[in-house]
Image 1 (cartoon, one colour):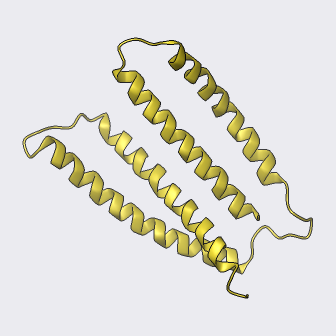
Image 2: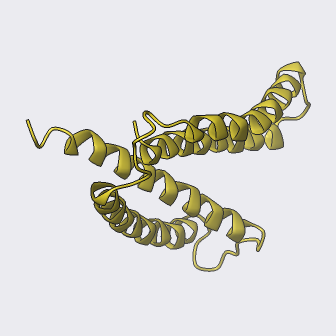
Image 3: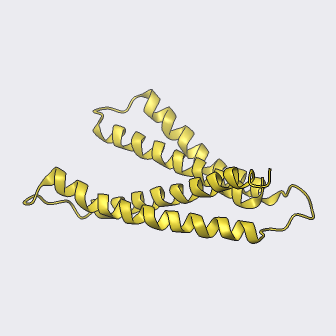
Length: 147
């Protein structure tokens, strides 16, 4: 596994963790009282927030072999195609971000201004997850071309 694959796997883990954290935060916002499970979840999530960069640093720093380059032509082609897929995904996410609120609140409704940065952050997280998945899928399928 080269550096690009490792960084995409770590990024997917971080995006999954961020999604779980957002879901837990939404559940805690609508629960009437904080209980032991939510406090334990808050402590575990804080520990994970501090552990993730340390794990990423040591994982990305180590190479398979000393002669391995950081990237080659194949890596650049894969990144280029994954960027194209991510651009298509961001277009679809922006379309959904403009249509879905309209369907929920209607033509006369209003959306609080605080929601807009959250929608943009969600689009960013989703787009980067699509990019990471596209890179990993291409590495999985590209390796079998020479067989």
